[in-house]
Amino acid sequence: MSRKRKPTPPAAGGQRQEEVRRRIQQATFELLTKRGYAGTSTLEIATRAKVSKRELYALFRDRQAILAACIAERVKTMQAPDQLPAVQDSAALEKVLRSFGATVLRTLSHPAVSAMFRLAIAESERSPEIARALDAFGRGPTQEVLVTFLASARSAGLLAGSEPALMAEQFFALLWGGLRVRLLLRLAATPDEDEIGRRAQVASAAFLRLHGRG
Image 1 (cartoon, helix red, strand yellow):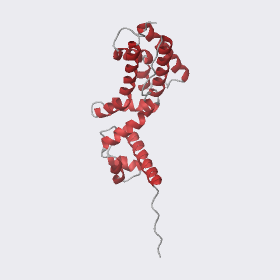
Image 2 (cartoon, rainbow, N blue to C red; image 1 turned 30 degrees about the vertical axis):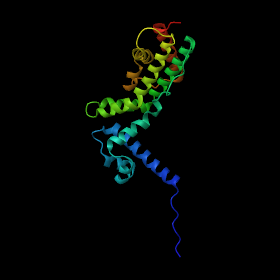
Image 3 (cartoon, rainbow, N blue to C red; image 1 turned 90 degrees about the vertical axis):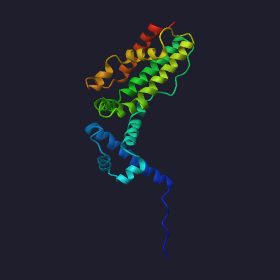
């Protein structure tokens, strides 16, 4: 009497699927940075990931879906907290701004994130969807978190002057200076924790001199 084959445990199947998904995303990122979006085919992605096209299409409907998942995975490190705590005085406001600024610098300076921005810039004319996806998953939500926080601080009487969206742009400008461009051009090294802390502190103090009421 033949023995029945035991079914694959769901956990094992899920682990296999996640491993295949990871390999596909890694292969996509490597090919995109080497050949660009227009020059990368799903066959090349499947070959590099060592999976069949059938496996690839079982997880992703098309190349655009792979790209979106790849970007979403890469920019996880650049996402700020969903919200910032409400503050009641200027000291707390500066503390939150300093912490938020340090997080933004730390995450957006990550080499993988810089690589995605370089790709978006290089492919901006041929494949603008890369820039749109990068903005939707990363920069946009980070900006919205700060705008919401600044609007709340202004309502509490701690800030005066410009619209929250404009104030957010000014804060990021004070935070980065020319560092972002130099990182993208590979003219600067990833900042260490000392530089990150210094930049966040200087930017927060300068911002409150411009807009603070306390």
